Image (tube, rainbow, N blue to C red):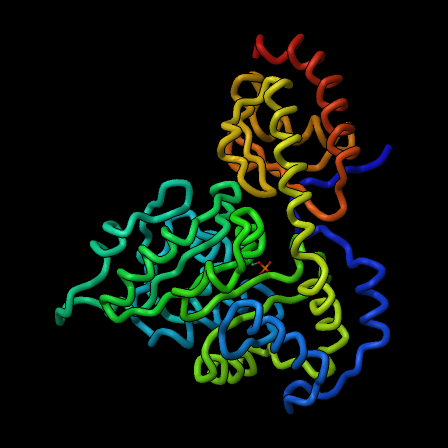
Length: 351
Ligand SMILES: *Cc1c(COP(=O)(O)O)cnc(C)c1O
């Protein structure tokens, strides 16, 4: 039985073109700034996002941590959305390593309201920490791949600028947002001082992220990256796959979005609850409540028929479409679900 893995877009495997590029990559010592392939990847990333410079980092987590450490002083406060990746899933590095205080603001589907952000910025008072950074996330992972549009990004940008605080975008899936909006990524991030983006998710590269921003900011981030042990030597071997990712894999994210939509429609037929309007990119979050089963039970039953997904909480599961899943795979998932559904309708509703 073919295993169909919809746990995350991080499970994507490098393409033959990526392996080819890795094999023949020209390399040098990147700590000396002498790896031509890393330099090319960084130039390409900066250009695509309309910023001065970029830095190749080991992971999205490292990119976000560097941004926190460069934008802020220890003891400062950072405004984040309550369900943001930086707050929930980065092992508390914001406090444990960067020494910062997170101030969580709940958003609507991951998008904070400008007035809530404005109301969370600290006044100048001897008792208060200084608010020095606003972090955004687009697309928003935990909110199911929701997209913030240019107006929303700029509205939040205006608030930050008015108060003299910087904006960092956790753009792990930035290109999913730009493709969904049919808008150049640079336009979407125009109001951000820095952006991190993942090469290793839907873009298919095996390792790595980029942190992008101004010349001075990236210069400082390069030094902090070295301090955190992220100075890699002949990193061109992995950066080569990143170049292929940025050059050839962005537009195809559209297919992942189409597959997510097709999957979501099928899940409705199988008795899950979800709002189709909320399936904007490559993530589908569905409630298992109408099936009379907990999320963990559904995850286990699906694993039993070779479909891997994650539970989001007690009664919601998450499906993520990506490069290594095509439309036929989604049809296969739905037919396995229909077969299962016949059995859980027989047993589930009585539980
Ligand atoms: C995946 C992800 C990251 C970073 O992930 P790494 O596994 O550290 O590369 C950051 N933010 C969001 C929103 C993500 O989805």
